[in-house]
Image (tube, rainbow, N blue to C red; front, top):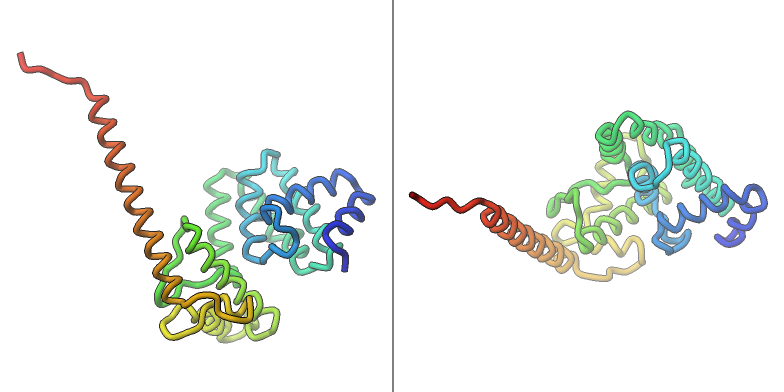
Length: 231
C-alpha cells in the first residue's frame, strides 16, 4: 500500500496530466485533508454532484477526472473507493447532467437515497437537505458508523434485514443510546442529547436569519414602489 505522496509520484510517472487531475480532485474532495479524510458518502457526493456541477470542464473531462481519482485511490490501496470512481453507476450519473442540470440532480438524489452509505432519518431527527455544520458533523459521524459496520460485515447490504441493521447502527440518535462518534473514535465524544440540542439551536438561528432576510427583502420592495399622492 502506498502513501498519498508515493501514489501521486507513481501516477505522475504513468501520466503527469492524470496525476494533476487526481491531485486536484483529491484536494477538492477532502478539503486538503488527504486520503484519511475520505469516506464513501463524501466520495459519492463528490463524484455524483460536486464534480459535474462545480468542475469547469465538459462532461468528458468529468469522466477523466473520476478515472484519474480512481487510479490514485487504487495505487494507494483503497480499491473499494477506486471502484466507485470507475463504476458504471458513476459514469451514468455524470452523463445525466449532459441532459440538463435538473436531470442530473434528480439522478443524484435518487442514487444517494438508495445508497447504503447515506444515514437514514432517526426517531429524533430527519436530515435536512441544506445542513449547518452541527447537523453535517452528526450526519458524517453516522455515515462513518455505517461504513465501519459494513466493513466489519455487521451490515450485509442486500441481505434481508440490512436496512433495519443500518437503522440500529444509527440508533445513537435515539434516546438512551451512545453517541454515533463512538463507532468511529472508540469512545463517545458528546452526549447525543447535547448534540441534538446544538442542531436544534442551529435550526433556530437559521430560521431567525431567514426571517430577517425576508423582512429586509420586503422593506426593499416597499422602497422600490413609487409613491402615489392623491390629487
